[in-house]
Length: 124
Image 1 (cartoon, helix red, strand yellow):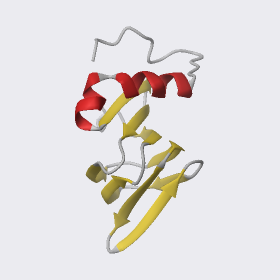
Image 2 (tube, helix red, strand yellow):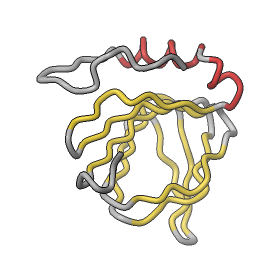
Image 3 (cartoon, rainbow, N blue to C red):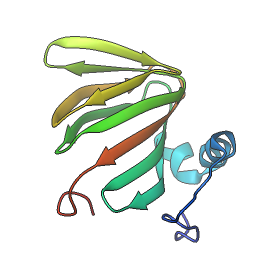
Image 4 (cartoon, rainbow, N blue to C red):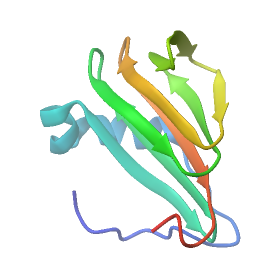
């Protein structure tokens, strides 16, 4: 992927998610691996990342040192916390505090917004 040439912070940032998703689906990294992420906002303690995961691709375990949300924009995914499995679909939001979600797998081509907040020492 090319170096970042867009603003990641500012008083007012706006994104057309459909355009962003279409562009990322064409990226060679996504075509090759079935997953890709693009940071949309990086401001202080806040990170907003658009992430695409192709159907059947497993992300694995996601560790969270601070609170985060996952909002499914398109598609559906499955994840596990301890021994319980959950599904998250388009239009749904998951919040989880410090801890982890395990065995994250896209059940269909999925686009999601990942929002992370942390103190300066936890996000780079």
